[in-house]
Length: 295
Image (cartoon, rainbow, N blue to C red):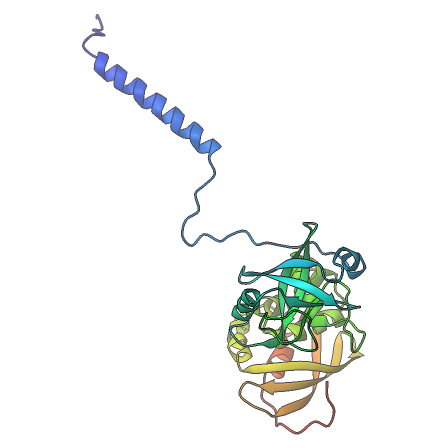
């Protein structure tokens, strides 16, 4: 049987063109990055987990930096005005103050937020800021009455000269090392981070520090009614059991409750966790009374 190529030449040309087009298309796909589509998550900016004694000389007084808020991605510029054990800084301009206030939902707050601080030398460092103007400031016309604080790994407060657990927790978050540090934490350290997560309403860290279960989602709703949960004292009272004294305040209330609670921990998968029973007891309303001391 003789095969008539002339009869099928157009079909052969079509097949050949299809193969060439497919090869070019696949080849180009290997070279080109995937297009960003609406709803795609952007890669999170993380900072270096650098200790305060290394940060301090690289961020001298009167130098500037750019702050990126981890949760929102919003950025603003600052200048360092002072600070011995952490940095005291100010927004550089009124526009920078406006962005910072947007990060705090238009309400100044002591709430800690995970940030990345980009220094003049280009180094990006994990930090934690509060959002409350206080003390003095030297920049005029920036619409910010005073300064605010940024902490870094192992920095301490100017008042107590102690580590602020909430700030350190946020520094870990900004550096992307929270999971690793939770695994390395002792039972008492884990409890303190858990309580800081409650106080700061850091839901993801709350989940990471507690015994897994569907109850966690229900308690996240209870967490929304909490204004603050401050640690006054913590003592180990038994194997993996801690006696804590707390100052608790609910949203919309000026009254504070002093609580005496026991928190039990257990170790699963190489990490300490707060038990379900302990979490539920902490979020149960107690009878308020007027405390004499201040945290």
